[in-house]
Amino acid sequence: MSIAVSMKPTATSGEHRDIFASDIRSDPANSEEPSSAGANGEHIEAALTKLHAALDAHPLWETRLLKACERGYLGVDDFRILFEQYYLYSKNFTRYLSALMTACEDDLHRAQLAQNLWEEGGLLEPQKRHAEMLRHFLREGLDIDLDRIEYTEAGKLFAREYLDFCRVSHPAAISAFLSLGTEAIVSRLYGVFVKGLRKAGVDESHLDFFHLHIGCDDEHAETIKNIMMSYSSMPGWYDLCYQAMDYALSLRKQFFDNMYTYIESRRIRGLIEKIQDRKSLVPDTPDTSALHHRFGEEAGQLMYENTNERLNIDFTVERVPFPAEVIDTRIVRIPVGKNNECHKHAHESVFFIISGRGRLHVNNSSVEVSAGDLALVPRWAVHQTHNIGDDELVILALTDFHLTGRAFVGNYLSTARMKASQATVIRCGTSRSNCTEVTPPRRPKTRPDTRRDHWQ
Ligand SMILES: [Fe+2]
Ligand SMILES: [Fe+2]
Image (cartoon, rainbow, N blue to C red; front, top):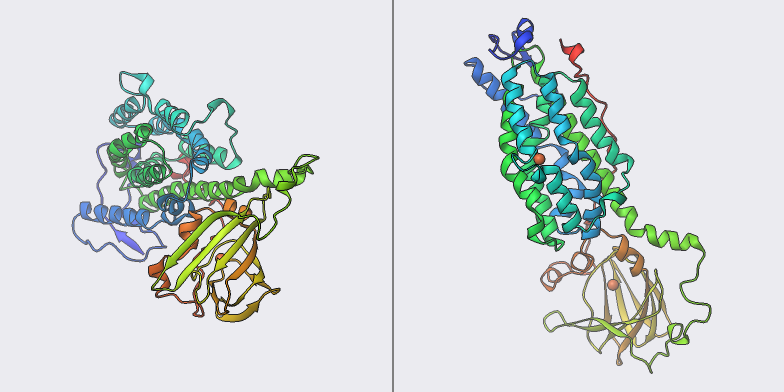
């Protein structure tokens, strides 16, 4: 399919004047043809609208990292991991702009890019250059020691591909890559970061780097977009711009996917290292109080309680403070005739019924339990226990909470425990879909052939 365009050379495209063509092919993945059939400018506008629509719908915006950030699931440690790696890409940003400047034949374009670079450089105050502002955020906002950053392969690949692409591509491709694929997404993207950083407790005074870019990058995007538009009559312009934009967005998506996986693994890495180290968690002669709990004589630490008359909820959960790193030992008490919440969570539990009689619901099944019984509650199974006996129901729950609580990216309790209002509509014994999603990481796309020599 093609968008028929009859174009005259633009005044600013230099030696590309000889390669203007009569049509702009549209992205084959998007079959909806821009509706305008009028003047050339309208065709170009329609093509631009399509590019913006593709940008807005790009899978980048659905990445688990951005979703977790938006929902406030990332803590300061997680942001440290992300921004240590992002720093390599970001501190090299002026090099990407400089590469575009080198590729531009038009001196007006180079002058306009020089203005962008001048702003990136902090105008008359180089100590306020954007890279320095980012360093300030990393040091003061996230307490990162810049000299100790170790870049991952994912961080290096992201920055290297950006620079390589800008060094070798046609100026139309570089300008699409840096305008639509980069600067134009900044206000939306940094808005998500600011939201997540605030939720993680990072002080507003450390977020200047983001606010500044939310304010100025739309303007920067516009300047570079105008450079892209100046090539709009060259053959294959639309496809070239689409591929370049998509490649920039895909590179960022791949980087975010890799960072999310890295964040997940870093959360439990310390634990795994301790397992491998073959060192005991307690000294050679541990205090016996750390190893022993006499049930009935000692109280555990009250960690959770809830009562709700309407839902018949009344129960307590005590924790036995053993110095374990994976196993969390809990005692659940439910009075006669009462039940705990209908809920689910990432940790799995083995119940040992110490005393009393109850009915345990697990998803669509239920089982009667009494003193001396063992029962399993698998992870993410919806479950609830009712006391159906004449005495207090007391349950020893051995869970792997210390492991899953660490591994889970999210607000563990607010995500896993149902609120009373939810419990009224989601009852145990009814089917529920699992709310967690698992997206396999996407491999990097092959770089499109946007080389200058190929397109000239
Ligand atoms: Fe900047
Ligand atoms: Fe539970």
